[in-house]
Each structure stands twice: as structure tokens, then as C-alpha cells.
Image 1 (spheres, helix red, strand yellow):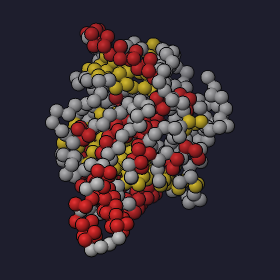
Image 2: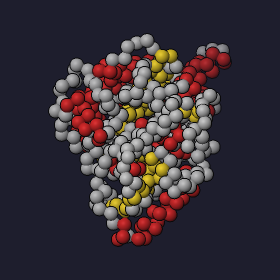
Image 3: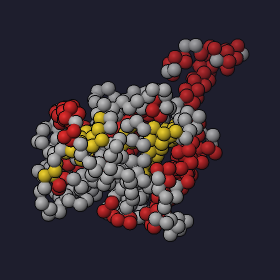
Length: 495
């Protein structure tokens, strides 16, 4: 029910009838009615929270099979909510994954492609992420989920890692967030500092206290805006290296410092959920916990696990882009359930817009979908994706449809950003491969020659995506993408 639909039958409200009967001035009565309407309307809208871990692997939570890392809070969240086992992010590294989460668009659609990785010195980073002092970031013309929800009457806050440009014009407060406390990029980049809004703080940044610092800020935001509706985006900087953990968690995990860091992120999640319970907000708050990409395997014991999937961060194999996801809202999201349908981080913006009674922007393509039926386990709910595309930068690597994943022709140097890109390796060609992810989730056995009709269908889907969003591997220029954000003094992008 819209706010306007409340206005005309307002006389049916008991307090309004009483006000008029007692002879209050019409203006005063209308003020009271308006306040009641606003409170009633706000109560109808759920609070919305997303918690984004950094480099957390599919197999790094107890509820997703971890045996050496203890995550009791998120495990409880899964028991009280719903696990998504086919949940994807739209990129295997930080910056593009975060852009997709906020905009509901494939990263290349919003200009987050190879160009954002050009550093201030002119070097192009193989990871395709924004580096300190780079002149690029998420364009202000992009519409984020925070902007959509703000227009719908939400208080919007962000805590944690931004990584979509450190120039002031790219700051979260210019992208729909009323409040921001956090860090501008990954914790292996320098200089590393806290921001409150656009102000750089003098406060010393102690890495082993960072999860706690983010947790305190998150709880403060929830308590301040408990009357709602509110949207909170919590973007942890852990368990990205360099790892750290507070004294309470350090040296406690069987999995070493990596396990300690994950355990503290789990604790933080538990503190947020318990605060919602304590404030009686749990039944009116939808919370999503997930990760920005797969585990950083080249960090060895300081990286996580994507078991049973192949590879990890920096690749478009399943381990790089399929991540753990838990959704929680007691009394609304069915407890102890599992969704095996394909869903993605692209869906957060259109789904949150729907839940808030709003609409995503209609002047551009939004690649994500409203997956409310999947969240609520509605009878017969199916994935809205006929095809899901695996992009790395502006290279189109693969497409998934149902159980089938077709990987396009590629070269060894493009297969793993952290193993091959930038290294002097032989330019070995890699042929097409078709994987049956239902039988072979680890992508070990190509069945390309056995299913020519499926290959033909998926190849046609790849061709359509190339014509739409481009593909650097085949030299196809895009026809429907938007420019990356760029500061006025930015030099020409080196080719």
C-alpha cells in the first residue's frame, strides 16, 4: 500500500476521528494523521542489512562444510534462515564485485572494466581493482541500492571497505549513503586510514581491532535508527590479507590466523543479529551474509578454501565466483531451508527495491532480478536467470545456463590473475570446455564433444553478451555500457 493511498481514508483512523470530534484545528489534526501515516508506512518496510566478507571462500563457514573454522553465529543464522548454494558474485575480485552488488549491473555495464586498474603511475594492475590515488571510481551517474532506498524513505549507512575510488567525488556519501565510516580500499594498500564521510581521521588504525571497530559502528547505526526503516551495508576488510584478529580470537582457531579472522567476522555477525533481537527488530529486518569473491589461494595458509569447487579468487572458475550466502529474517524467510537455484549479488538492488516498495531505475539496463520468491521459498520459485555470464574485467570467459557452463577459448595467461597475469609464462591456448556442474562441480571433465546442441545454444548466448557488453578476448566493442567515473584531471588511459 503506498503512502498516498493512506491519505484519503484518513478519517477511518481512530485518532483522526477523535481529533476532529474534539475540535482540534484541522491543521493540527492533519499533522497528527500525517505522523501516524508516516509511522505506519515505515513499519511496513523491512530494515535491510547486507554483510559482505572479503575473500571468504565457499568452504570457510561451518554451515558450508568447514570443520577447522568455527562459525557458530552464522551457523545459527543458517538454521534460523536459508542457505543459498548456487549464489554468485559478478566478478572474482574486489572492485568490480562491489560495483555489481550496489548497482545490480554487471561491472562492465557500469564502466568497471580493465581501465579502472590503471594506477596513478600509469601501471595497469592485473587484478582489475582500483588502487590508491587512481583517477577512477564508480561514476556518480550510477544509481546504487542506497540511492533507491533513500528515495523510498530509508536511512542509509555504510561501514567498512569501499574500494570504488578514493577521490572525494566517489565517496559513499555521494552514492546514496547518509553515513559512512570505513576504509577506502583493501587492507594491503597504503596509505591505510579511516574515513568518516569524506573526512580522513587522525585515529590510529589498528588492524587487529578493525573488525571490532566496524562492529561498534554498525551497532551504533542500528540503535540510532531503530525506528526505521534503515539500510546498512557492512563491508568487512577481513579475511583479506594481511590478516589480523583481536586478542579474544587470536591463536584460537585450528586453522591458524585465517581461522581467527573468520571467527571474528562470525562474532561480528552474531553481534549484529543479537542487537536486532534485543531491539525487537529481528522479524522486521532482512539480513544477507555473503562474500565479495572466492578465497585467495595463492596466500596459502593465509587464504581460504572453495572446496568442492575449482580455483579461487582472480579466476572465473566456480571457486572464484560462487560464494557462501545466508539469508535471515525470522518469521519471513523459512528457517533451516536451502535454495539450490542460481541467484547472484546482482539481485540485491532489485530485490531490496521491491521489498521497500520502490523500483530500480528504468532509464538503464539492470542485469539483476527481484528474487523475493527465492528468499521466501515460494512454491515453484525458480531462478530468473536463463544465462549468467562470467566476466573478468572486460573479458568474457564463460556462461552458465542451468546445469551447464561453457567456457570460451582462452589463453593460460588469462586463467588466473594471481598465478599468470604479469608473469612471463608461455601463451598457451586453452580450448572451449563444457562442464556439467550438477555432476562435475569441480570443473574437471569437459563434455564439450558430447553435447553439440548445448554448446551451440550457449555459444549463441556468449555472442549476444559480446554484442551487448563487449569482449576484449575477441575484440568485440560494447554497445550498451556506461563510462567509468573519472576525476577531471585524469590523464588519458594508456592502452
